[in-house]
Length: 541
Image (spheres, rainbow, N blue to C red):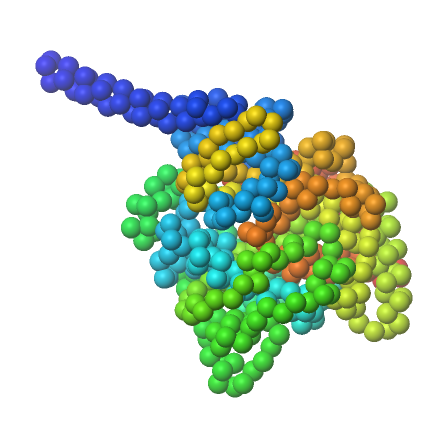
């Protein structure tokens, strides 16, 4: 009896201590002059996403809309306090003017230490996205020359070959009498896989014809984020990143990352032995290793580059003397693989959906494609000609506005920052605190985009686009930490749209979900039942 009573008291005391500890965590915003979304005990505001009762898009928008009059609001990711920025001018100021206070992404499961160091074998942790501090700055300036307009011109042919190969596959299937009805995320994941294979890994695959090729299968396995095992690993890495780092546990499977590492190493060795030169990412990384890749000003980079293109900041144009290891360079190929496999394919999927359910937009874009093709007089499409297609750029810009693949992004405060909105609201964001930028909510705020649910490319015509606040259009992020590969991503999307609509029309089928509903997963935006579209050959295609 006494033992039972002692046990009950001990358990009660532990529960009380835990309750007190968690409750203290939820007092952080009480000292700040901003509203805070009331947390649920132990879950904060994260419950709907963790238990998949809401889509990530609706969850972010709900947080964003809770206090519509505030420029900054507080909420809790489990027990971690987070500042959400919900004003375009604040986003621009923090990510650009005051960038030195917010240079890094959160540590999370990247396994990076505060000084930017990371386990040598961790490919993702060594990638540009995950690096921190001075090491990130050095890597950004190292890679920046690889993503200028002039370098995209060199890679244009490789990407165009993949787009033409996809269209050739559709034509062959049509000639065989098959109905061309496809789930577009699957199609574009395969296309994106082929682009990254050729551009970043120096190999050629055709994932529509050879559906079970090793490169695609390995990538698909690596990016299967829906299993219970992955969810548990994510939770542990999020809650105990220090412990997981000490245990050497990475988010991505070691065998998978070794596969991609060995592929790059073998490719580099073959090129060195046989003197092979190919205009792709491996060649550029080999130039980096030699110290031969320098940032040169290219006046054509911004001219006709497209509205969504990210302009490189001064960070990307600085010089340094750091020598990179082979693994650190290989890690960048791995990052491009992840971005190409999922992010770009997501953008293309939602673009084709909008073209399907908005036939007037599709028809007008087709007309521009026909006119452009006729102007070539039998010559091949070039990077410069593609970039000059005004309506193409308007359509792609609007698709990225309505369906940004990156639903939200984050920064961590690297030193105490005094926030001052100029209207009397002042407080300190302490070092190591997190801010989030709710991209998809900003893009759907009627304050910035009237009737935001409407797909309207005219928002981005020459007159209207000049009125858009830079802090309210951030599909590739904001400030010096924005996506380095925006030119490559836009080139891929536009090339697919060009060759696809040139020869085919996009038609809804009985499987097409209208209006589209999103799935309730933890990662990005994805259609609940897929995006099913019929690719119908044109008579004049």
